[in-house]
Image (cartoon, rainbow, N blue to C red; front, side):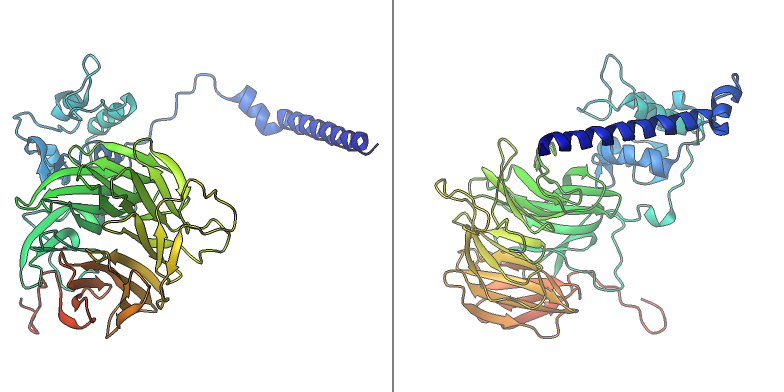
Length: 494
């Protein structure tokens, strides 16, 4: 009677557990502390006073999520910038004072965010703030509207006050414009626009984000997507009009920097990865979120649309490359093998072939890989298979942080980091042959991109130096710092 004996044992355990719980409950009810709580607590004691509202801890996140996309120095909706405390108190084009410390009913900001008949003036064309959020803002103003922002977290830069560089900033991203007229580079608090040979700085796009993770031209070259954020505080997607050097869209998102921007083929959507393990996409014109997918279980570091933009690919520190259907936001498949141990580390970079739905990826194992984007319908996934893998390229030293196809798809370039040194390589896509390698005195390589005609590769990384390399043979053409360095003389003058 093994089944009956097992059932009896389970019943006895449940009975013992129940008796134990009753005993604990009885002791708790008869303990001195319980008696004081139940019988001796003052019946008419006033409620504990509410803690004072903190601007930095309580109010700033509300403004960050709902207001800063339209009210920052690079995009002053109503001529009102909320990134400095003085500007926020003063207000914008209205004659009404935005914030009157101690007097919420006289503060125009409160009037703007308070709904009437279910609608509020601000946030513009969006749902009103929650009642709890409005109450917090009112309390903060009533308590004096104090600014407790740490000095290190205050906004210091804008288009009129760009960063001053004493040293070269780390280059996390580089991108040539589709017509070959510009090279975009990541900077500190800004995206830098240069002539393609690096000879002249032609534009500085200074926004709210402190760390810039990705700069990518739109397919027509008229806009630049800039993603990054304030580490540990906010992620942000910016869309700039390149010719006018004007911020068109700014979308705060999540509470950490975002990564790996990519454009849909028609320039209507921008995808990016987040530190909260999600893949997202926004409408490039309005900033409205149009895709949210949480299939990853670690940071999402890079993205790529399919040729027709019907699907989206993402790579992550969780060692996977995932396929998502854009229209339904549905997770479709793991493109990489799901066999435990098949990948030796996370994936950091992905790029799609210009004319085929094929993908080149790189990551912690240092091996560039070529994959099919779609698994044929008749190939049912099985544990242990890696059907989508077309080929592995020769391993690079260290970890790969950058991969990209040439404009005609015939070559790929990959950049890596290994114990403080970097390496750049080019491979033949068709047969995987190594074409050349470039080492020199390089720091870790985090960015690599082909020029519009495929003849030049720009690369850069930790050292802050941009390299221009001949794509045919790996010969270095030029080396320069994209950021405008301000060099101090020996006597301390500039």
